[in-house]
Length: 237
Ligand code: CTP
Ligand code: CA
Image 1 (spheres, rainbow, N blue to C red):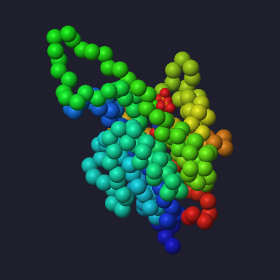
Image 2 (cartoon, rainbow, N blue to C red):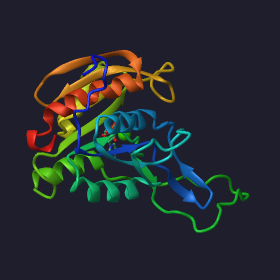
Image 3 (spheres, helix red, strand yellow):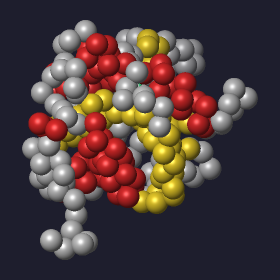
């Protein structure tokens, strides 16, 4: 065995990863969206596949030039569609990773034809709250709709504010979501969105906190998978 060989430690493990941003339509040509590139989710997909996992990516809008080799890619647009796909696919997965940037809100109604400028000026856009997919997956596990040993991983992009720093917000979010691992990225000032590099922390529901030093999204993916692997039951890997 070569000392520099890639680990092949996720053989046969079924991994479902959401990636990219959702788009919430306003009319046939317009949507509310976000700047997610999908790079971190796709980096995870590539790394997991290289380690032998059977990987499905449920992807919203991304800046990825192509689909990674050896990975099933399913396309969705809205948070509602993403919720449906993830709920369905989580029942057949060993690991579920929510790396997608899910729109928190969607327009309450979608105009059937293109909204015109008119003379009266813009009408306000009324919004409804989207389902919390990650929270819903954890609830499904608690209630037995998905297997108890399914590993559930969330992401959080945080900035510090008057209520606390990036890590404080991350800890609070881990508690609220109830997932097994939360990847906390520091954002703002050119960090994270659309960039090649990421920095942050990996917080576990057991209380362990691992710093993820600045490095490529590929490196971060492999660090995340190292921890995920320890949570997958022996019979599954
Ligand atoms: N997420 C989700 N469904 C949503 C919103 C977010 O599944 N409707 C997931 C994201 O994919 C991510 C995690 O939850 O894995 C945290 O997303 P984030 O936007 O940071 O959390 P929110 O609960 O929406 O909190 P905030 O008010 O900070 O946006
Ligand atoms: Ca949010």
